[in-house]
Length: 210
View 1 (cartoon, one colour):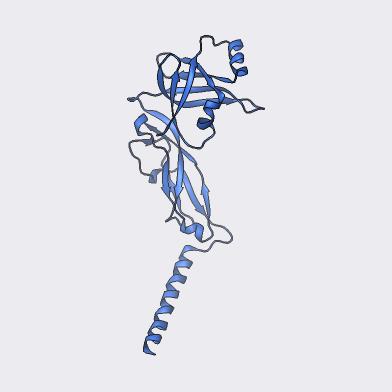
View 2: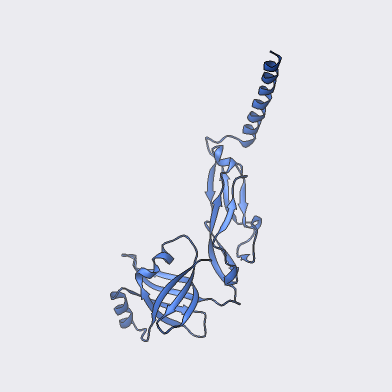
């Protein structure tokens, strides 16, 4: 999984006055959990743009001024209700030998047969939660929707796993092809195609005899 580096400064004071001063200076107060004790630090607000404003999942490398380097994932983020500025960020520390749960984006590839016939693709879950060691976290969950016809769906239980576990029940639907008023039944299209091929054969024989 791709990682984003954030350069931060460890905070000595964590009171309301110190926190307000940090925000006024364009800094975001942060806390890293999961280790022996919480680590309080701050980082420039612009440093979070690639982490927050993206549909992709990333791990985070936190570089502190003290020289300490910590691996983490984003756990929670608070925004101002009016300005949408980042107010606070919580991280969870990663360890190579400890599994972590993370929401991974679903990536659909291919052109569905059902959609070509007028069906509508519905994405029920754009992200799926998986559990794995940090080294085994995937960048995305890929699903090939090419063979899906109208009425078909893909559930979590049908997806392959590679050194990670889905934290969903097997019957959770990830995506499906719904019918619509303009939809043509897939079997009708196949019958029309077969009829067209059957009509071409006699025509070709007649042309050969001439």
